[in-house]
Amino acid sequence: MSEKLTDSMVDIKFQEFASDYMSCSAIHHWPDPSTDLLELSGDFSDSSSFSYDISGEIQRLASFFDGEVSNSDEERGGNELGLGFLSSVSDEILESGSPAIVKPLVRSCVETLGTSFASLDAKRAAAGNLRLLAKHRSDFRELIGRSGAIQTLIPLLRCTDPIAQENAVTALLNLSLEESNKTPITAAGAIKPLVYALRTGTATSKQNAACALLSLSMIEENQIIIGVCGAIPPLVSLLVNGSSRGKQDALTTLYKLCDARQNKQRAVSAGAVTPLVALVAEGRGGTTEKAIVVLSRLSEIKEGREAIVEESGIPALVEALEAGPANWKEFAVITLLHLCRNSERNRGLVVREGVVQPLVALSQSSSSRTKHKAHLLLKYLREPRQDGPFPPARGK
Image: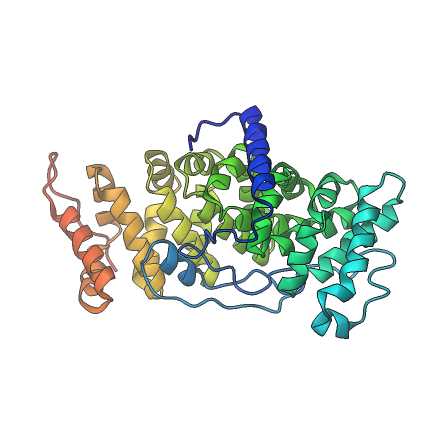
């Protein structure tokens, strides 16, 4: 698929998705595009956040190192989901009830959302009901996906009522965890409204919109469409202004979207490198690791390399290589390799930061993959320069 999509062409692609989906709707077997890419662990909804070790993603996406997928119990959303929220459904039904029991409630919610006569309070509550029903149960998500709810939730993504918008965003996020729902969510035209919610919503709406876009980006074609629809700048804004959870959601979504070269360019143009370098320099656990990973991806293009150097990324990367844990060191080496491969100037800047000694130590005591990359970077740094030797390394 060409990356050169205009906004109008995106709408055409949505129509094609819808046409393809309708022609295949009788076949209840959809390919799992995430099998070799990224496992969306568990249920990352309003009370079970989207939180997994970035190492697990990298091991699947880039085959760099082993990792694990983990869940968190951090609360994502508020308690006020809407008037009349699930007044007729007990916790027991939510946990062990059959889809047949909740089918009438789902139908009622869809009818409420689909009528112009329903009040905002009623629609807010209906979206809240679907949000909770889709939170933990795969069979409920499948039932809701087949009920016509997806099409009725999408208009609420542009609602000026923050609770209604948040309920719709999170309901669609939860529904997107079911593989069979990804294509119909895309076909219904949800991407543009999700980007709108990412720009305008509450903190929880922004975080969950980012996660919903990440989930939909498991369909490779969607990565470009999401970028064309303008998701990159608000993701960078979330990276700058969001909570710790919001920053991690933005980092993970940016990483996946930057599979597409054009999205790498969009991320650099949106100013992503500045906060990424700042997060690397902070040296704070998983957020720093994810920031290094995203920087390594942006360093694959010329614009990204130039921005990293301009934003003083080299000192931050060298510091991560020297003092960080093994995962930081590996991705710092990868990024520095990209910076140095075709630039004598960058090699000189890297050497000035005193990288040779820790790089030699890394080449002798790390994993085989990291050793190989460390040896390769040392080889680049030892190549003679056309304009003379490298300046001496900084003192320790």
